[in-house]
Image (tube, rainbow, N blue to C red; front, side):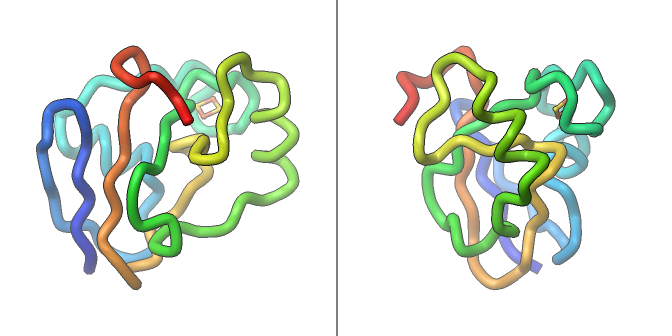
Amino acid sequence: MSLLTIMPSGKSIEVTAGTKLLTAILAADESIHHKCEGKAACGTCHIFVQEGRKGVSRIAREENERLDTIVGVGSKSRLACQAIMLGTEDVKIELLGFSSGV
Ligand code: FES
């Protein structure tokens, strides 16, 4: 288990290792677009991992290819439907629409 903090609300929830960020965000009753329902096809679940990047899985090729097509992507960008909580450290993310990006 590790703690996931979701900005800008500041809501924190305990998340089991192996849980996708998208699943955790929705479980926390936070609002996030996820048009393709987690297939890495739409890019609407783009978020920023502000702290604890080692606490989430590495970016796979499919996610990286989708991120390359999104405007406003930075070094902290992830697709919430592809990033998996590892349980190794607490993570703070920022939902889009509220962030300046990188
Ligand atoms: S929900 Fe479509 S890329 Fe994540």
